[in-house]
Image: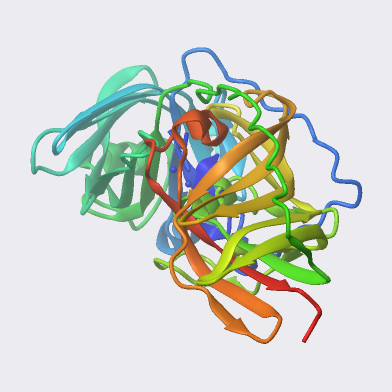
Length: 406
């Protein structure tokens, strides 16, 4: 489920960071794969499921259950995730402040002497500015089970994910009465806080992937000077890093060096930039500075967001072996891209980011371009699952070249 990945450190079409922050990426270390091999996604979409809902118990409700000697279990297809009941969202729709979501699964509360109460969830309904309600059945009889107050609705325009968050779940009169009578739960009544709700969904749709043609080789001009050293650092668009990290943080591979973790937009600490080891390169100097330059590097970055059993993302690819090419007032960053699952790339060279270099600063044999703005090339929209329009901002690149002379 996506909630853990996005919020805790672990949900967003960037596909959910579609459904709920599941795993505490809070301290979000960057995992460095030893061999850099692609790892197939194990999750597959469940037909009909569009999302998931977490219905967490409040400390007060948990204490009441314990003090009353009651035990609870879930009814399939609901499942436990980190001690929180999770219910599939079969379908959902949203228009402004109004939401309808069809739910599946339920729970059973058992007490001493064979007392038990079976509760099935059927749907959540929110109409306009009113509170939401969760409807279902108690021992086969229709009832409004909970009211959900203070719920916040948000939509991610890039991913298509809808989230209902910060919902305060309280008991209805019918639910409180049955809990006391059928299960023997003491000390609860209408308005008792049962817990909190987080619900999210998006389309069960794989990324939109297309493989652009390989760029032509960049010709070395006469009079170019070989480089003795260079640094190449790619700062990736924050929303992409945050989205992928809602599944698992991007990984630095094959010698690439991750930058320091940063906290951006109230997200958990994450790594947003990567530096690649220098392999080779050249520059052609002119009267106004560098006229053209080529820097190639090694190492790569692994972007992997498989999603959950209900929300299949299938983002699973590596960019590696970067090439920075500059000519006049234009530049580009090329990677070899290889991927599997819903992002199948055949290990091909792709212009991943177009660059618009501005000022260059030179000191002796060293020239630096700092924070060259990047954008998504038209042909490379499919690399990032079609989530960004051509020309959309996509991070920046910082390059330093050293001629080793003077």
